[in-house]
Length: 240
Length: 296
Ligand SMILES: Nc1ncnc2c1ncn2[C@@H]1O[C@H](COP(=O)(O)OP(=O)(O)O)[C@@H](O)[C@H]1O
Ligand SMILES: [Mg+2]
Image 1 (tube, rainbow over the protein chains, first blue to last red):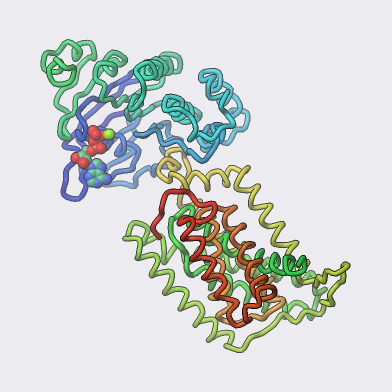
Image 2 (cartoon, chains in turn yellow, blue; image 1 turned 45 degrees about the vertical axis):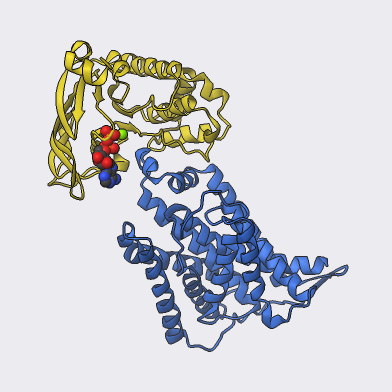
């Protein structure tokens, strides 16, 4: 369970997050929607400690991981704690091969047998990555790079997966493939997912609940099915 | 002709070892560690002291190996210290700040060395034989052989280390995308510290090897450091094979410049600058450098 409690984040004088509260329960896919510049990426960065909070705290399974008062869990420890972020723009290591990228995802694991098993699991789930394992990751297509970014993060078996616009720049058919994989990961492994997407329709269709963010504030949250039929949402985010 | 190539290769492999120190640190921090030459000079002095002390008790070759290890260790220790107190606090400062910090440290280190060790140059009192060996037309001194063997071995080992090991891959990850590296669980501070250790230990070896033929003096680091820096830029700063290539290219061309083109020995050092200008006009990011332009 992830609980974000009344957090604020500032970039200098600009307040990017204003008193944001958000909850992800076990086995849930939660989508976070909102226009460009609303503060979605900032929230994900704050969860993994890439931005500092100016107010509030964040708890993972009832244990505080961030606040303004105590020693924070450093970003490089978050994956050990079970929180993986697939960053905006995928963040693959383009000078490294596909399999080396996967190896980096296993950096926090020490058990060679476990690494081997995880690798096998990933290559079974993403056969295209197995085919391209010795290629430079930079030579993959956008969709393949997104698969790689997800597979790499899954290597460490996170309990919570944060995805920042996984569909960005992909052809519609690839977006659908990526979304199906996300649902599958959630169903089979029970991984909690926080899905940030600008493609509101697709995000709501693939999630249980959704939060709507505007100018750094959560303005609405509900079951995804309810948000899909909400007249306000329809007007603002679903093109009528 | 072959003789000049061999001589050039020998000098070049020294440049390459030092150039690796610049390029490795540039890779993970995108910053030129201008104190690198002086850090290796201190390591060389420590090795000299350890060697001259030990050789009265034990077999000189064993004393020399211990001296090299001591030199590597002290350079590494010094580099870690410098990184912690002079660079890390400036990591988020404007890029000029750590650069100035490095230049300042370079001055402090060479002056401190002059104060402690004196400005008079000293030499490794090598009791072993350096009579040249003749191989057909080729003349090889045992020192040359030692330099070539050691530096090439180190470069091959480094290559496989970076390519194959967990830490080597983490270094590449940090150098490409430090933020993502953290998300993978990589402690970037640890990798940066390790990179300083690796680079300065290689530098100390180069400093000791070059002192076999020349001598040890407080500004030893500045000259070899400058040449190696140029070599790293020629090859493409941040690129490991580039540093090796740039170093060897520079060594060979310098030697040819004097021996074949008849450049007066006094102007030998200008070969490096001319080469630098030509290469940068032709390829602004070095021979093997990426096409992205990086500001220093
Ligand atoms: N590193 C930064 N420095 C200053 N302002 C930033 C930075 N990153 C984002 N912002 C600002 O914070 C706000 C939220 O940005 P972001 O979280 O990236 O939004 P989203 O991901 O929803 O598009 C925007 O106004 C953006 O301009
Ligand atoms: Mg964003």
